[in-house]
Image 1 (cartoon, one colour):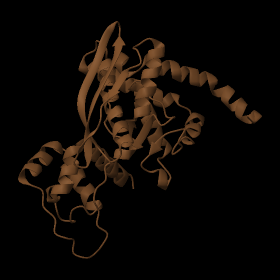
Image 2 (spheres, one colour; image 1 turned 45 degrees about the vertical axis):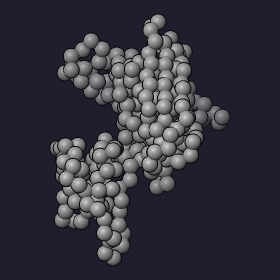
Image 3 (cartoon, helix red, strand yellow; image 1 turned 180 degrees about the vertical axis):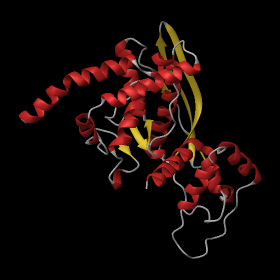
Image 4 (cartoon, helix red, strand yellow; image 1 turned 180 degrees about the horizontal axis):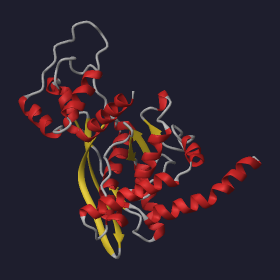
Length: 297
C-alpha cells in the first residue's frame, strides 16, 4: 500500500474507533429499550444526527468505491452510476442503527434510495451476534419448493438460542422466480429475516435488488392493447394502502406512463394494481424518492 494511503488510514483510525463504539452503543434495540414511544423517537433522532455529523468526508469517499462491487454493496442504479454520497451515507446510518449491517460482502442493497438487508446480511449479522454471545448461529432448514404460479411455496424453519432459551420460526414462504437455487436463496433470506425480528424485535424491509419493484411503462405512441382494469376490490385495497400518499403515487405512475396524464392512481390495470398490492412498501419508497428528486430539481 502506498505510504500516502497508509498515512491517511492511520489518521482516520481514531475516528473509525469512535464510530465503531458509537454504533455499538446506539443501535435500535438499545435506543428503544424501556423507553416510551416519544422518548425512544427522540433518542433515535439524536443518534442519527450525531452519527451523520461524525462521519468525515474521507470515510464516505472510501465507502463510495464499494458501490456496485461484488465485494461491496449492490444497487438498482449500478448501470447508471449508482447513488450520490448523501444517499449512501443515510443508508449506512440506517443499517448501522438497525443492528449493524455492513456495506460490504453484499450484506446490503440500495433500492429506490432505501437500504435492504440481503441473505448475506442476515448471515453476517448472526455470525457477529454469535461471536459476541448475543445468540447462537441459527440452524436453518429449507424444504423442497412447491411450484405455484410464477414462483413457489417453500417450507422453512430456523432456530437459535438466546439467553438459554430457544427462539424459533417456521413458515411456508411464498417466493417469486424460477430455478431451485434462486427460490431457496430467497426463502432463506425471508426465514432469517423473521428469526432476526424474533431475536431483536427489529423489523427490516422485505426486498432485495433481485426483487426490486418495477412499474410497467409504455414508450410507444400507438394505441395500447386492451388491458383488464383494476377490480373494485383492488381499488378499495389500493385506497387503503396508499392513504395519505395518493398524490405522490399518482405523479409517479403518470411519470412512468403507467396511467394517462389526466388519470388518477385508480386507473391502473388489474395486473399493475396486483403488483402494488403485493408490495406496497416498495412502491411507496420508489414513489417518495421520485417525489423528492423532482422537488430538488
